[in-house]
Image (cartoon, rainbow, N blue to C red; front, side, top):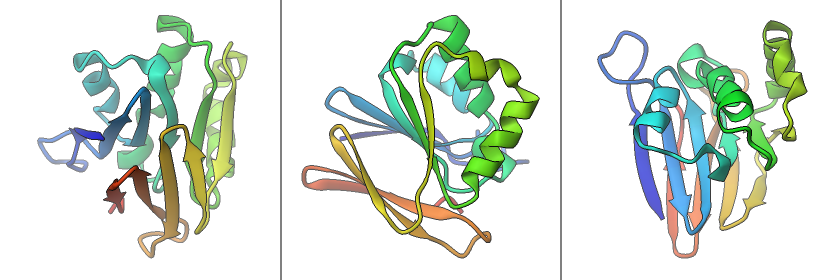
Length: 158
């Protein structure tokens, strides 16, 4: 398993905001997509088609800002065909629905975008098992544990 730090700062810091890319085998997942995530993915020559899922800890702007840019690139840059799963805490579907009102063109993506909420549960994404645990940071926020074989990364968001 390989962890690539795309951003570890917050608004007002000199670092890009929270975003982490984890690779294991042929599978890649993103944990949060704060401002700067998109440019770091491009700078690192990340193949966005290989990203199977995005996990959002909470909907503060410093954790979700680059989601529309990443989806846009998947639609018009690389013309993604594979499905993309986006997971978030309770209430994330409502947030994403609002995002679609601001960016209605995303509804026309040629690849399937599935939105799912995780609340103290787990999901398997190819080579990963992702466990979500609710945190107290906001009314609805998650921490994630990404497991692959005998390795794990734990990410709390804030």
